Length: 437
Image (cartoon, rainbow, N blue to C red; front, side, top):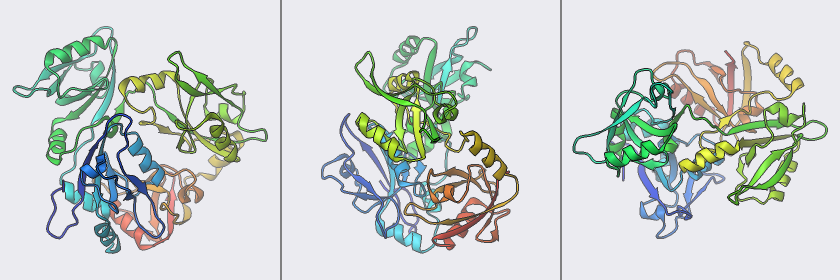
């Protein structure tokens, strides 16, 4: 379905894909030399993508209500991989995409205009029962609407502390969507939860917006609150003898095969980075280990040379997300910017003072390797994400850096869209004056 648009505006299309367990979505996502954007290719006839009108050459703008055009390709592919069996894509046909780009228009503005008024994302809240007031939440069915439940809270109770707000609507509980449930079935489900429940909630105005746009409210779109487990992405810098851990292949009682970090040596890079004995390896340098053989993973680590990034979780974390039907990588904490080697930490701290730094970047195949952020409706721009190994990291950018100048021009008082427009004018070369305030 096309989203609302004016006669002259490009018209992004919303595509809602559903697949059966174990099936693919029936398309490939590419980046191609000499072409812009994340490109939809090889749409399989009769597949999930073909069924909802995804076309060869379409450019991907959003995944599950998150803007992705400025993200590195591996990160976009990750977001699709973590979506489970339901995927919400916003796309623009290739010709319209290139017109927007060459006209110097801001693609994010095009997306906002096509979708109308924005809304707040849903929240995934983990509630632990209070010994006195219990879970601190009740669910009330909306009159005449099956499967629609509002929440009522105990003031200051466990649910409120976990991020649930008054007036929220319940979307999902412990891995199950509630839209097909009666109140009695929901009550039975809640009683079975014991001392913990994990729920997906959204405020009423945002729910109305999602419904008007035809966008499903999914856990992958959520902001996490009080989740007991989060995967961690860490950067290890080798010493003269390696990284200081052994990777073992181990089987669980259920027969599942896992790659486990063992024999962490005291004072060595792995331990200093924060890894723990028994941690489970999920990714090496951003690549999932799920489909790799053990020896292939070991080779990936060896081929990394002096520096490797690993994403890990605990056995308890894997069990938590598996029970919810979610990927343990979904709400991963990126800690690759944290210093993990004594000498490196000392020199890093000395280099990163509050004095402005001039960072010169050359655009790579996937962009400049960083994202910008801002406080909504306020001027001021900061570095919100730096891609591991990308041009931004190599130039010395860090998450949290405040942007002072773009290509020699002050951006004081300018909004995010204005700063991005200045960056695009520079083409493939970018000069940023930043400070780590």
